[in-house]
Length: 358
Figure 1 (cartoon, rainbow, N blue to C red):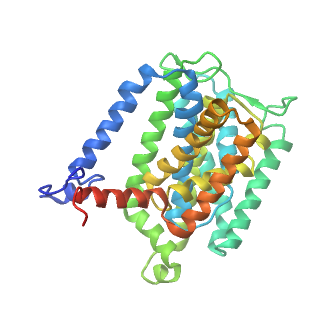
Figure 2: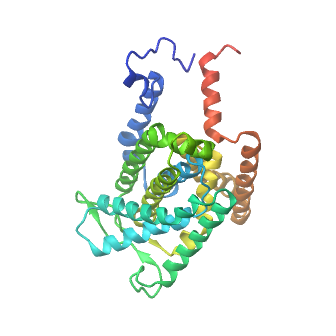
Figure 3: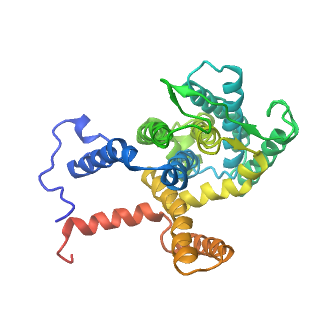
């Protein structure tokens, strides 16, 4: 039996309520962490970091943030790109205004600023929900992009209208700028990804997460049993925007280095992150990583197979990527609404009894 939990008993409440109560899950988690921290930094190069690892880590943080709001609290949002832009521009102004402060502090402050903006735009959720809330967050997306385009103070009165990340180091190691090392930027993003996943996992399993899920399942019944909808919804918007803001700051400062808000943080970015949590699985932290990995790896695999091996034109490969993503979204919404996370749960159920059929 490949997935074994027989004889794995808990004798205390802390053991039973830990994140991975099954020993096999814990060992697998430690093995993945060991490979990610101790092996990958020594074998990767710029191509692997820029094309796969860094987009995967940053989009995973953004998907975690959006999944808290949509998957756990049930508040539909189409403004993820705008909130990522808030984090990016907040990080840029902090980097230029306080050059001697650590990048860790800049990113956390950018997340806090984005959380405040998220609470502000989350106020309509107290009166509206569903499709109308989605339209309200879509309006926030367009307003934020317009504001960062039109108010020149945000991009330091640059003639081009774009922002460029200056060189900044952490503990003497360059993290931003053109002279960074691949392993340094990878580890920097990995630290924030692991921290975001651990914090989100514990929040969703605690009292706050249960309040979010009560609001998601039936808000009127949740209010009757004592859940404060004002507190639950606004904390969901704040925590979600915090993670999304950190991902936007990383996307600008560490990954791209220079952005123009309309091209990088447009409505396409909001839909991309939404597709990640739909394919990965709503209401699942693992689903955020699965959806991000799938949508990051799919264009790379299609390029290698379609363009490099079969000689197809690149525009055909790009259109095929859109067709596959769109088709999978329809299939998952109809056949498996809980996405890749539910398929992983079913696989574990089968592995518990393998090689026996029942």
